[in-house]
Length: 216
Length: 228
Image 1 (cartoon, rainbow over the protein chains, first blue to last red):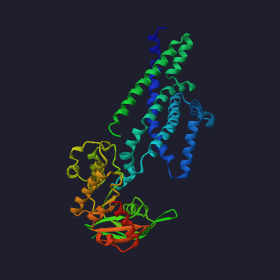
Image 2 (cartoon, chains in turn brown, purple):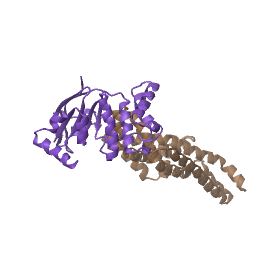
Image 3 (cartoon, rainbow over the protein chains, first blue to last red):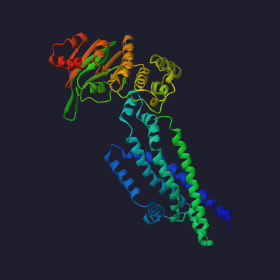
Image 4 (cartoon, chains in turn orange, brown):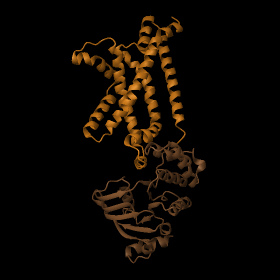
């Protein structure tokens, strides 16, 4: 089996991996912001619930969370699991997990903003929502981008955990291919894929950081 | 016509009373300097008047105001021009062309025409403070508050700002200035309020306050005379 054939066989899995990556970010980045607001809420009950949520997401293995999200509906509620739920479960588990990490990053950024920015915005008649999205958030984003980059790079590699519920992303396929062909090349190809993928991610994030360098 | 009126305003932080029964008003065209030792409640008074602090008791009526901070508090991600035009356009819903034209006039007046596209981080402290004065003026306030506008600046930059305030005074802008610049306060204001311990101890013309018989006022002003 030559390298080209292996790549062709892994192509479908690569696309699936890229989709997991994109959809996880699409859901977890906004969800993380909502969770961060909950974490900073003045209502004790909400704040505590969110704190517990974050501690569970950060304190237990993502692989376990994947399995619970996938098999939970069957074991807990006796629901029949359809085959397309597999992909949905992957996105749900990843989004819930990454949102918790993003929430803490957002919070650190928001809490590092000087009080004077809020006061100036208030005096100049910005509403609370405008103050956040027009004045604070662009500055917060600049501060937290390096931490976000870290998480996003981890996510690229974490997508391989979907193999634990046998979801046919690239790693699952590479592993199966290596087993049937008695050949380590598919796994090396998989490694190369993650490495290049992350190279692209790092390049894009660096560009994003540079684009915000116009002020201090 | 009163631009600001405070009646029996009280404010405490925990057990500590910071404002204890403050009543005074500011008429149109008044330039009022508030002086007094640190912790006397000057800044808190300003922060209550501008709604940044809620009072515990009393009444405040204030016309549309602008506030200039000690630390400028410019928006670092906005250019100088955007810092000035954003609030009038976004929040006062005024026509863009009008606001931009006014902003450019203000920048010219502040001697900052060449800094339109600069970002706050590229400016000196004095330039930052002039932008923040322009930003406050762009809202067309009826009264302008200054909270120790020169305390973060060195003596040379302080003069820049005092010159701007003096020009505004000549244009009959109503202003309330919390300051430690005694000679400036004496020079530019038509009224000086001396505060101590949350009370207004003196309220009068600069001549009245600077020649006051009140022992505490004399002591405070005496220290400044010796040091300057």
